[in-house]
Length: 139
Image (cartoon, rainbow, N blue to C red; front, side, top):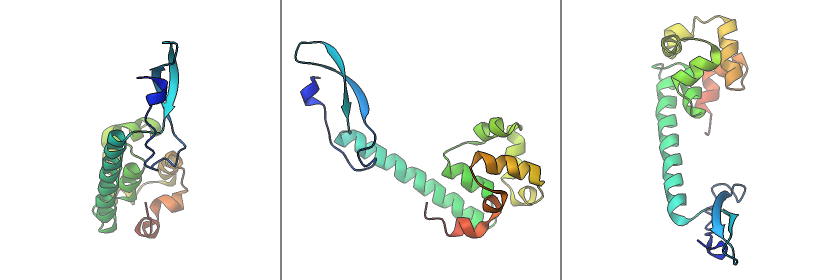
């Protein structure tokens, strides 16, 4: 692709703040790095992916509000993390973190463990455990 042909179809997903580097040919036939705001196909795929993430997050949010899952599950989904990654960050086994996704275990966690989880999500313990915060979260 030639530099002058780089697509600039900004779908306003990143408000023009993110540009993808693409190797293109300049007018002398040399490879250069050009930047694109996006193109229609990529933008459509990205939009669909974000819709899927929001749908999953809403499903988890409803389970937290109904008492099926702990707030930890919501913040995992909101931060696009999985149990294995969070387990590594807090220095626990995956099965331990999975157990903490259940309200009956989460509600018994000591402040030290809640602090580790809260720190990973850039929250306070109070914010992590506040169901009203999740209820009112606009995503």
